[in-house]
Length: 264
Image 1: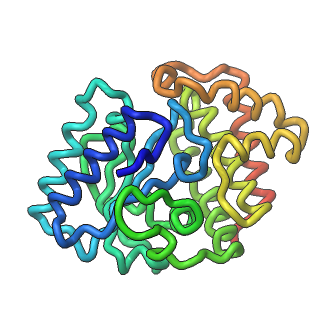
Image 2: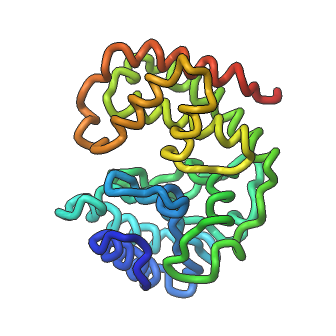
Image 3: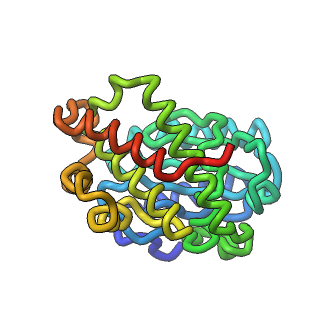
């Protein structure tokens, strides 16, 4: 596998992921891809590593057990990249286009040891990034596996996500008082607003810079704070958020949802 990222230690982990998945899946293996920030071009040493492994058909129970063993072992590595793999295993036919309701795929969360079922990656945003920017670690070019996503379909999905995520976060209001989550929420809403504006997906970094100059000036201190506090997220995950940012983040979320209402 050619060097997929600027980080040799990460490339070694990705090579192991691909080699093991290929060995486990055998003829069921189609390809492996990077999406997320490493595909969009704004990843750095603080980014998580979003991947997709495409299969010809469903992963068998035996194959799932062996893949689960691999993912359970990765967080024990001394290399931090091994602790921040996040991705799904998806049958080729289900990746082509989104069919509602979204079916859960085999998924491992950032830092998790558990391979579980989740709809986390089964959306139009992931498909858009994969089609336009997916990095092939192995297999055919990503855009041959995914149909283009229309800009208005992407916008509508993001509008729904803004609303649904706001409801989920409100249900755990105390969770916003976290030095990792609070800046991440701000930049995530900047990215969703940017997608609504331009009809494509950008990184949190690009969207935050756009938001600084294009959104209401009252949000600039909050957005700049989120950009400034993006480095070293895993060191801040157990720390409280800066007190002034929490109420302002709730206001920012509410304004974002109101500015881009989802269709019923």
